[in-house]
Length: 74
Image 1 (cartoon, rainbow, N blue to C red):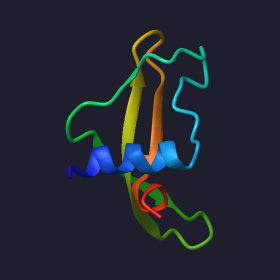
Image 2: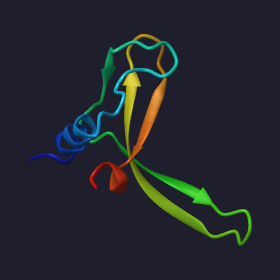
Image 3: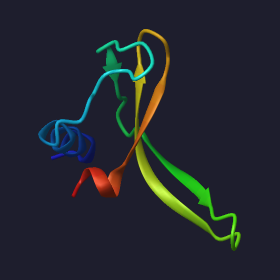
Image 4: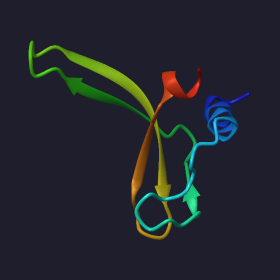
């Protein structure tokens, strides 16, 4: 089973809202291998943590939503 399919399946089971939070369109797509490593910098100590995310895009307004892969799979 492909990782993206598994993430989407888990999000659906968790009752995640898989529509655009901006325009509320349900025309959401994700391309094959829609993963990014998002660097998060801690302002206190300057340490950078990379979080693997999967993104979806709204076909109506272009809004991009990120899902933390580790959290989505739990």
